[in-house]
Amino acid sequence: MNLPDYKEAKSRKEKTTEIEKYIYNSNYSNIGYGKKYFVKTYGCQMNEHDSENICAMLEEMGYTLVDNYMDADLVILNTCSIRENANNKAFGMLGRLKNLKETKKDLVVGLCGCMAQEEKVVDKIFSKYKWVNFVFGTHNLHRLPIILNEAFLKGKTEVEVFSKEGNIIEDMPVKRTSKYSAYVNIIYGCDKFCTYCIVPLTRGRQRSRTKEDIIKEINSLIKDGYKEITLLGQNVNAYGKDFDYHYDLANLLEDVAKTGIERIKFTTSHPWDFTDLMIDVIAKYDNIMPFIHLPVQSGSSRILKLMGRRYTREDYLTLFDKIKSKVKNVSISTDIIVGFPGEEEEDFLETMSLAEYCKFDHAFTFLFSKREGTAACRLPDITSISGKEDRLYRLNDIVNKYFLENNMKMIDKVCYVLVEGTNKKKGSLFGYNENNKLVNFMGSEDLIGKIVPIKITKAKTWNLDGEIYE
Ligand code: 5AD
Ligand code: SF4
Image 1 (cartoon, helix red, strand yellow):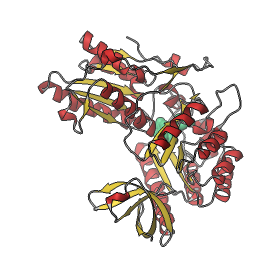
Image 2 (cartoon, rainbow, N blue to C red; image 1 turned 60 degrees about the vertical axis):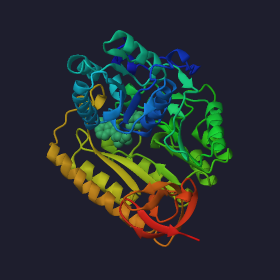
Image 3 (cartoon, rainbow, N blue to C red; image 1 turned 90 degrees about the horizontal axis):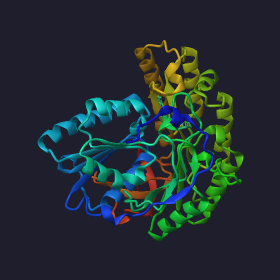
Image 4 (cartoon, rainbow, N blue to C red; image 1 turned 90 degrees about the vertical axis):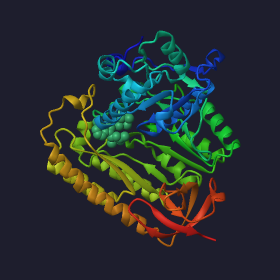
C-alpha cells in the first residue's frame, strides 16, 4: 500500500529522469477473459490520453469495452481535481456505482487520475467508500495490470499512489479514440506552482520526453494514416527545460513540422515561457495550425502576481500582439479565473478590459475554487459567492459576444476541416478547421478522416455551418 503525501509531491529535488519501457506481462492476459469494462474520464486532454492507455492495457488483459457502465464487470473512474466541482462529479458517480454494486456483487470499481493523488480523497475512500476495489495514481498508470491483480488477490481496497513521480514510461499500449487525430505527450508534470493550481502536486515534476521518442511515435502515426497530432503538456512551452542540453519547444515544433504530418496542434501554452523563436516557427510552417491556447487567468497585474504567474498584464498584451502580427490568420483562446482571493472590482474591470482588447476566439472562464495544498488556499477571500458569480456572468457576456463576432468574420471564407464524424441530431458531418473551430456541413460519410475545403455560410457563438467548396 502506498498513500499520497503532499510534502513529497511538492519536492523538486530530483533532477534526472530515467526512461523505462512498458513490458507486457502475459501472466495477466486472462484476468479479463469474458469480462466487460467501462472507463469514465473527467478533465483535460492529458486524462483523455491516459484513458487511451488504460483501455489498451485492459484489452491486453482480455477485457472488452462496453458503452454503458451498468453492463460492465469493471468500472474505472479516471478523475480530475482541478476544481472542487470535478471532485464532486466523481464522488457522484461513485454513489451511483455503490447502488449498482448492491445488485451486482462482483462489480469491480477502481479510481485513478489526479484525485487519487489527493491525500484527502484517499482518506475519504478509506472511511466512506471502503467498497472501492483499487486506487492508483498518475505516476503508476503502467502498473494497472499488477494493481488490478493485487486487488483480486487481496479482496480489500488496494491503494498504490506514488507521490514522487517516477520514470517516463515509453511504449505504453494505446487504444486511440480517433483514427485521424492523435494525442502525443511531450512533457509530463509542471514546475510552475501557480498559487491556485493543484496540478504540480497531482502530476509531479516537469519531465520532457526525448525528441527521438516523440518523432518515432509521430512517424508511426503517419504510417497508420493519422492526419493530425496534438502535442500535450500542462505547459508545453517548458518543453526541454529539464534537459542538460539545449532543445526547446521551438526546436521540437520545427522537427515535428518536418515529419510532414498534415496538422500539428499543441496545448497548453504558458505566456512566461513563450519565446520569439517559438512564434517564428509557428508562423513558418503551414502544418503548424494557427491556433494557440494562451491562458491569461487575469487582466490585473496585481492579481497575476498573487497567482504567481510571473508576467504582467502588459507582458501578456505584448506577447498577444506579437503572435497576432506574426502568425497569419491566428486564433487565440484563453482561460480566465474570476474571484481569485483578494480580487477587487477594479482588478476585475482590468480583466474585462483585457477581454475587450483581445477579443478572444474562445475562452474558458472559471470561478476560483479553493484547492487544499495550494498556496492560494491560505489567502484571505472576502468576496461573496454571489459577487463572484455576478462577475463571471458579466465576463461571459463579453467573451461570448466576441466568439460570435469573430465567427461572423468567417462567413463566405473557405477553411479546411478535418472531418471527424457525423452529428446524429443534425444529420451533418462535423470537424475542426485550422483555427480549431467546430464546423458542421452536409456531405457523404466517405469524407470522414479527410481534410475538406468548406465555405462558411452561417456563424453561431460556438460553431460554424458551411458547405463543401468545389
Ligand atoms: N480554480 C479555478 N480555476 C482553476 N484552474 C486551475 N486551477 C483552478 C482553480 N483552483 C483553471 C485555470 C487553468 C485551467 C486548466 O483551469 O484557468 O488554466
Ligand atoms: Fe497549473 Fe500553472 Fe502549471 Fe498550468 S502552469 S498546470 S495553471 S501550475
